[in-house]
Length: 342
Image 1 (cartoon, rainbow, N blue to C red):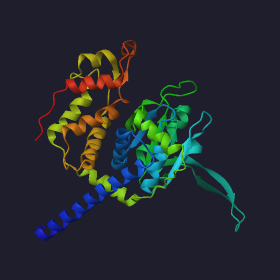
Image 2 (image 1 turned 45 degrees about the vertical axis):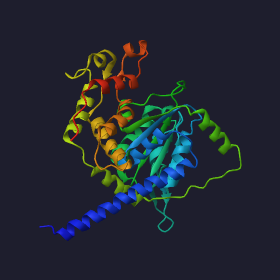
Image 3 (image 1 turned 90 degrees about the vertical axis):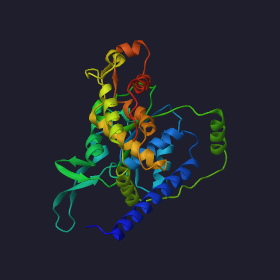
Image 4 (image 1 turned 30 degrees about the vertical axis):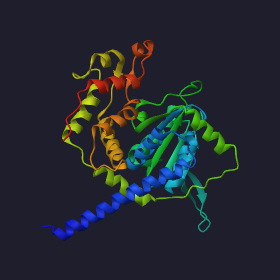
């Protein structure tokens, strides 16, 4: 039987972990905002992905500071940062690493030695991931799902934590390869970087055309982040909200009985069970980031679009009517009855 002293001790420890989470979250935002102007929603989504332990796909026009944002966050987290510039001639071994034959100076015999690729870091920036063929893109699949990679039959564990933050250009299609649906499904979010306001663009010019230099200081550690990922999973969610998330995911599937007419008309495929899992996890991280200790309806609807927009495959009817995934999802949120919150 657990004593009251033990319960109080556990409660005090949990409170310390929560306070540490909030302190680190605020410190990361402060550091990153010294470099990055605007894009608050995208920044929140990246941090949610990190606190959940998921991966994030950043979609934006050239010059929207995608790469700079990822590098700055990595510096603030104090993690090992790796970058891969994806090109059409990139090979899978350029990502995972490969075995080479070396001669042992003591025995004179030759032996296989594994040389780690850039995937062996904590934060991997896959820059312009859609510029390399699917064979090379698939080299990330095992790493993103299992946090390991297999080379010549040998299994190698990746450092923990491990995040893939990938970027892609939405307008330049020549010489690019669409990401396979199986790989897209591994990304927690598809975050879209929009245009800055005029005032924010003035701030960018003032910061980047002068002699101002900013040094980003690490504010956390790998052990902290692993603890935060467990802390996020402890945030409670009401059964009615969990059922709402499942109903929302099922309604995206054209063959589902609960699918509305516009889904049947415009969508070929909908979201999987993994999407519902990701919505709940992201909602928990958002709730904790906003200093709330339970998930709300607003938490769920705030993360629904970035979680689902890359998981719904639209057909030619949607293209001809100029309807995109975000419009479909907004209509779906309005269509599915709002749950009662306890």
